[in-house]
Image (tube, rainbow, N blue to C red):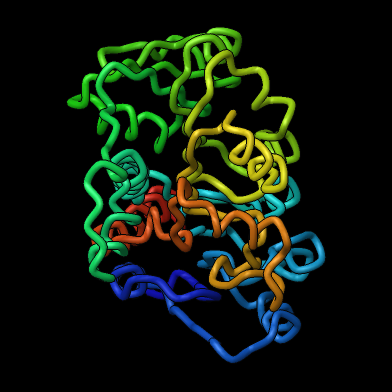
Length: 316
């Protein structure tokens, strides 16, 4: 017996569709349809599967009279008006459990690449340049890693760091009593006082947009390294560049950028913004194209996490 129809707005691992079809859902996809065309069709659907292709705002969702759930293949929910959806009885699901290990491993990998000048040294060796002293590395051992946001990815990052001889501290405005053998819960003032390496693991909200700006950076007692695998607009690029240039930020690992388009697959402008052009010239910056949660394994885990959460809704 069919349970209803699910609209796939974005691609996902084939397992997601296969399992939902097995559970009795009809799954449809219209990859060439515009947002307006999808809005005209959405009234027929019980569920939506999406990554970040379009915004599911009030204007879109008010046409979705039969909609029971939205499944986000990923962690962030900023492209969904969750408040309006919930007011209409639509359950919003995401899958941060599916890519938390991938994000954590990417953060560790980027940090090691930065500390050991791997990107710079690799390029030089390929060009026949052999400079050992210039590429002398820095060890993680003895450093204090400060985490802002201790949810799925923040806690996974702390666990991945457990063998490196670092002290891990974390601040989370909305969570308490989470100290364990991997992390010590602290107040923001303690984070400012102790941190050598700052790692961001927060969602993008009005509260976290440009959270890391010149004012916040100057609050840290030490000169720090910065890792951002959360969302690009959590960091104000112009302020980061200025602090990289003056040495307050000793280096940065950025998987996400302020200038990403909504789909996170290209910069929002055809011409590089001036601050980004400065950023890419700095040798103490490691960049990647929003791939921290984008592993072969996480692709499967994200799909199966959503399948399990949809099953728990008990739709008939």
